[in-house]
Length: 619
Image 1 (cartoon, one colour):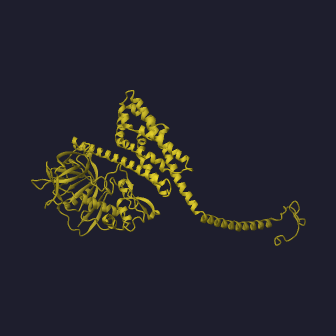
Image 2: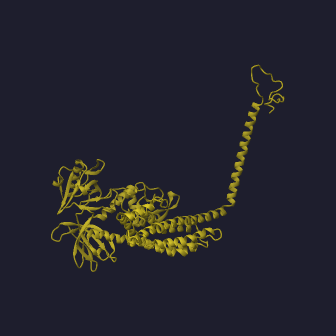
């Protein structure tokens, strides 16, 4: 300050020194501006140093508190997590009871009242809502009040397992609702179209705010999803619950009971699916004996039936049940697939044996009391495996067995597949929805993704994986499922002799009004086969056309002026339409080479035509 204030003179009241001289026409310059500026800078620097020291002291204090109080905080965190799970269960239960009230007391009540006036049969309403009234009573009068009481007294006696244990056995009632669900959905659709009174009531209720702009069908789906929700939350609760907790044993028992109820519901779903499939087969073949509760559908597929008198082979479609086998031939229909039953062979006394046929490899014989059939496999299973091999290789080309679970995979898009890439069963919106394996990125069904493994790339969190990945990640590397998936992951070579040499979209059918767009694949197999798929990523073809003994007609008379060609075999013909003449010429050339025998490939190159056709031309 002495270095700043050079003269020891006090300022006057107006801020000027006594000896300051005022120049005429100028405002007086106040003293102290430099002093105040220097003082402010000095003060700011001091405060900065003080604040830095204070922050350091605060950090040290916090670290000390953390070192001293780790165990109580962890304990408090675990208790809080358990309480959060219980609270989430209570909140979702309240919302669920509200939806049950909407189904039982609003939709069902109003429709029942209208049915009493004779607008539609009362049994229709009973069949639609099944036992929803009992489910609503159970949740609103018993389970929800007990859950509310549990949360209310959580501080005194925390525990969710004991509450759920006494109510879990009643969840078996959901099996009846699940079993009736498909039939209920069909009744809602039918009577919405048939009865204006039924339709008006549904639309009126759906327009109200209580429905949240959701349809009746959407609300009817919630009971299907509720039991798995209990199972999921209870599993999470049990993971965080210490084993020495008093509620641990109750939670284990309640989880077992709820899991059994979920399995019971799943069994009902499977039975409903089986019955639905029997009805679909009945519509295709017209055999009334198919629709029988004792019948269980096992498998279906296309094969070639060898004639006994000559060397011709005819395409047949087989339906295998637990007690008989149907051998059918396809017939033309404008309303979906239809078949004519050629023979029926009972399982009693049936024998199957492999046969040797020089003209037709991969043959076997089925002998029953009613009939003997000699059949030839269309190598469909081999081709499916090799295409799956190729798809896996393309999807996981940057993953090796050692990298599985350590790097995030490229996910296959949902719309790229219509079948589970593990069991090859078709997906549907209700009972077989799409799931992704977090290890390899495959799209699989819930049955094939019901495994969990800690994945390194996701911080060792538990993730859903498919069965082959589970076998690899939980066992010795490279030995999962007899090494099959290891070979698929590490395979970088060509899939083999059945590799695709030409593929592209074609229109298939006998009538332009009913043409079907199919992904057609010509393989370099022996004997040559043309595979037709719904989409290019499917693993299971719609059907196959053996090319051995086929003839190609380049200009079918029925389709003059169009880019068509026809494959004829015995009395069966297959007509295809191409997008352009160039594509047609490419297909004709490849098919003729396939029918006469593939030459040894000396060189090859890939040709792309109009973005649809991919072919390999051998020279």
